[in-house]
Image (tube, rainbow, N blue to C red; front, top):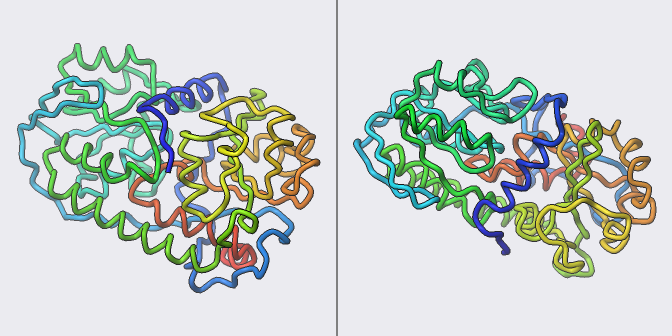
Length: 366
């Protein structure tokens, strides 16, 4: 599977979202209903022939920590993803912040959720719902005053949130700031999990959580392989669109964006390599027509921001010249889940796979 350089794609995504201004943020911790296991769903005989949009619901699944109230081995000194040596002596007041909500999910699954004192806008699971925001209410910008008010003893973050000066201010205030890998992909779930664990003095738990996550993902992709077409000709030609209608933002995510590894894991055909579409770029009529997608993956809030499927087809009329547009074949999932690539990756893959290959089962469960 393909990967971008560390942090490059996350930085682009951060700039795109920052440029969107104040946007509605539903980001619900869970959907109404939920997802059925793919093995129990009624798979389509021909996924290419199905017509209509489907929401991939996760449901409200409780955190399942790998350990209860672990005792970290501190102090610990780590060299972070930027090459900075950081010493952590106390993790009693943790902030784990990124644009995907992945880092806070990882900390909770390591068993240290009780130590987390605040959250970013993308952290939406139920166990963190009552934590105070340290970002703006309607954007992903960090607010220094909110962070300092929580007196954190360690901050785990990446380069996807800003302004960067806020994190430098935290370091100047004596707060250890550990910057981990900003790449989000199926490929680096293990290494990212261990980076977070190492910074919090629970390396062995990080190894265990990473192994559990990999085992769950492997089991889920094995189930997907049973129902997904197996040849390039029969797989669903798929693209990922990032849309924010109020700001006029329409991006197609390509190679190295993380969306490519998601599409691969779902047993679909990632069109971006074929049309040489790398990273995250504004979508063009030519790009959409060249891609000829049969399936479009989107974030739920993004689809809502253009008024649903009808609005998307109006805003991007070139979609009418593609099989996906003609069949209204769009699958959406919560913004805070679809590209997170953390401990819930197997659940995300299962929910998306049911929506793609067994859409009537997905609708019945919602």
